[in-house]
Length: 122
Image (cartoon, rainbow, N blue to C red; front, side, top):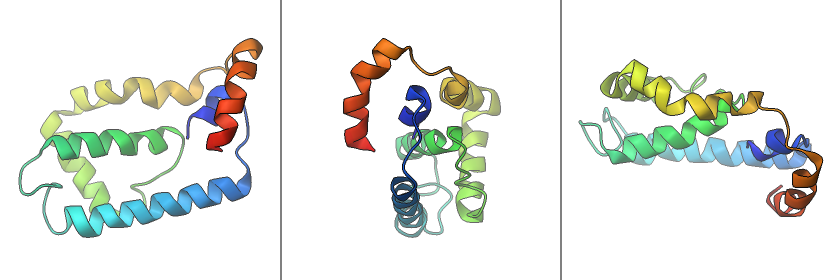
């Protein structure tokens, strides 16, 4: 989600729609199959699974995708993870990725070098 921002390229609307639909399916799976009615993904206590999952979900959040806004169950889980880790440490851990969208695009030479690789992903 951050490569187009980094390269200063727009994502084709159909690619964005497809990616967001896949994200929605993954979030539903995370809620239904892993979180279920537990406080955390692997049961009643926080685990590495929660830390890895929250890290991955912060990437779309940093790109402006509000993954927790319409999912109260997932939002409550995020709050529990943040509380367990500690708010300061949680914010520190995600500081770089949350600021990534504010970085300027790469210079033209690097962009030209990376563009063919990124277009395959888009």
